[in-house]
Length: 151
Image (cartoon, rainbow, N blue to C red; front, side, top):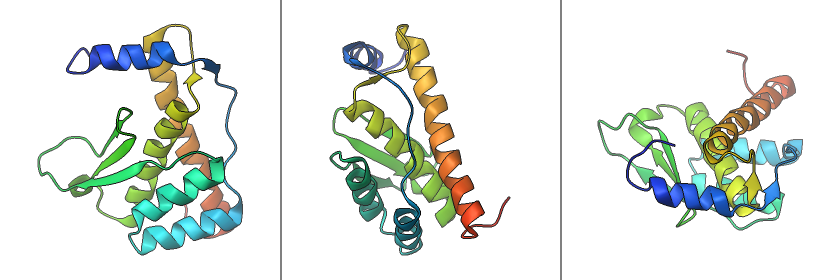
C-alpha cells in the first residue's frame, strides 16, 4: 500500500475485512471456454458478469481507460466495485484476459471480505500474490486444455 491518495481508505477497507482467506477454485472448463470467446469478441463486461455468476457474487463494472502515458494496466476501485483497464497498455486479448482476471480476484476478495494476514500491508501484498496465482492457474488451465499456446 503506497502512501498516496486513498491510503487511509485502503487501510480501512483491509481492516474491515472479516473472513480468513482459505483459497480459491478456478471456474469449470465450459465457463473458461465461454470467457475465452467473450474476450475474443472484446466483451469484457460480459466476462466480469460470467465470472461473478460463477462465484455467486455481484459483478464488477469494467471501465476501459485509453489514457496514454499511464504506467498501469489495471486498477481495482473497491469503493465503486470497478475494474479499470488501461487499454493502451493491454495490446492483445490475452493481456486483457490476464489483467481482467487479476482485477476480478481483487473484486472477489473485496466482496468475500477476505483477510489474507493480520498485518494490513501484508494482507494487501498477499492479496496481490494470490491474484497473480489465480490468473496464472486459469491461464495454465487454458494451455492444458489446448486453448492457448504456452509462452
